[in-house]
Amino acid sequence: MENKRIIGVFDDEKNLFDSIDLVQEKGYKISDVITPFAIEEIFDKLKLKTRINIAAYFYGAIGGVLGIYLSLYYMAVISYPLNIGGKPTLSLSFVILIFVGTILVVVIGTLMTFFIIDKKGPGAKEHFQYEGITDDKFLILIEMTPDLSAEDVKKINAIFKNNGALKVDEK
Amino acid sequence: MYKKSIRGILIKGNKTYGEITEQVLASQEKKAPLWWYFAMFVFSVMFLAGIWAIAMTIKEGIGLWGNNNNVAWGWAIINFVWWIGIGHAGTAFSIFLLVLRQRWRTSINRAAEAMTVFAVLAAGLFPMIHMGRIWNAFFIFPYPNTRGPLWVNFNSPLFWDVVAISTYLFTSAAFWYLGMLPDLATVRDRSKSKIKRKIYHIASFGWVGSARSWLRYEVTAVIVGGVAAPLVIAVHSIVSMDFATSVFPGWHTTIFPPYFVVGAIFSGFAMVLTLMIVIKVAFKLDDFVTEGHLDAIGRILTFVSLIMGSSYATEIFIAWYSGVEGEMFTFFHNRITGDYAFQFWAMVTCNAIIPQLFWFKKVRRSLVALFIISIIINIGMWFERFNIVVTSLSKDFLPATWVEYHATNIEILTYLGTIGLFGVGVLFFIRYIPMMAMNELKMVNKPTSTIDK
Image (cartoon, rainbow over all chains, first blue to last red; front, side):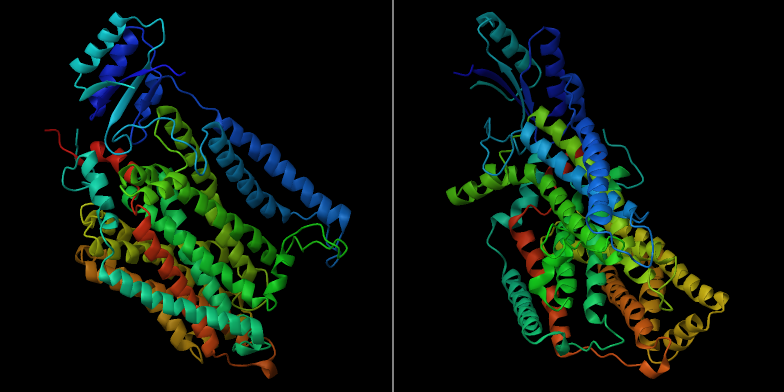
């Protein structure tokens, strides 16, 4: 079974930032922060990183340029070389198709990567639900692992309360 | 936190996050107003008429159109280019302004992207029915086949068009939907009826909004947006090459790619303006679409209109400067004067002269003036495509084959049908999808629009 979590509910980013800082200073591990919109400061504070951009680069470089170029080469030069007024079969104008094709490969690849690593898809289950998270509430979640004593929980509660949390909850 | 910036306040009314959600979704949580049903009826009738016209075309053949040996590209291609142009604004708007970090895009991008998707759908229809045998339309895709295998001509701009436009349709639809996920989740969490909740649960892909998801989401959006920006330019450049790689006077000019791209952005921005004014007035979203937003679009249109004007002038100058008789004839005796003078001057007036009224702040701040001029621009852009397509084809190098071109009722109905398709799409959009990117509005709210209490 999953551990329960302590939830600090806020309605203001400033209080949220202060609480994150204090909780981290005390050495507790924040398992997640849930916000209704993207906030870059939180990525920095939680030291979150993603490698989607690197993946996208490789989709473009390998799949796009090489994949599209080679398939064009196969179709237009090897499989059925069309003689159009004696012009070269491997035409410079393929650059245009490689350009557009690369974009298509990057877009499809990046989106697939995002949906797969983030476990999103039509009908995917929400991994967490709480009143108002997609509206105007900011949540800090701290997992109650067995090594978190009752005293620790109290301390975390106090930090949240002192920093303007609307409510501290357990779920 | 609020400091006065050049754009002024983006969201009026010192709103809290809850109020933003509330007000953007207000119109969708109520019953649809009467005008919505009325508009839906009108557009559906147009759409059905279009379907009938297309069915007739498929049944009887292209002979039902006014096309003839010389003017092989009539209204079908005019409308195709027109719709593609309109379809450019959405992504251009949303992505260029994203890349340029313009925060005022937030209240407009969703509607602009929706418009793009429907406009590109409408555009894609025309080349398909123009092929004549629509059931063989899949021949244009390169796939291993039993005819050789015979591949398509990879040097043809017409094939580049197929690739570019299908890529563009996919990319802009994906970008639109990606941006929508968090907002669909908001609708899901707010809905009280079980069925509605279920539908939006499926549509929102299980979005919750944890920090890790947001980071991945932001990176994905910037990458998709970033690669779509050059795509926008590529697509319309390729459309222009359909014309520019031919040898017809008035078509084979090197100015075409930039000229088409700018024209596309021009007509698209005008359509965004039309749509935003409708949304602003119909749903009383004045706080989100402020005069500042419309003013900014007006300024862009002034600038783009100047580029259009100079493009027209350049074309004419080069026709004279080249000394080629065919070019001289097309521009001076078949456009500026002659049979198609009306269309030429309509184009110049609508695109290059009337938008100059936007130099006046009073015009940029008047809803009525903005609305009328935005529609005039779209009419002008239609005439521009008419000019390009018909004038060059109707009178080419051999005077013995000169013909006139008149659209038939079937063509007119097909065109009305695509307007119906667009209208129906937009109406469904404003009814069932959050029409402003709420999560992005919330993002810009504090830094630009609220005053610390």
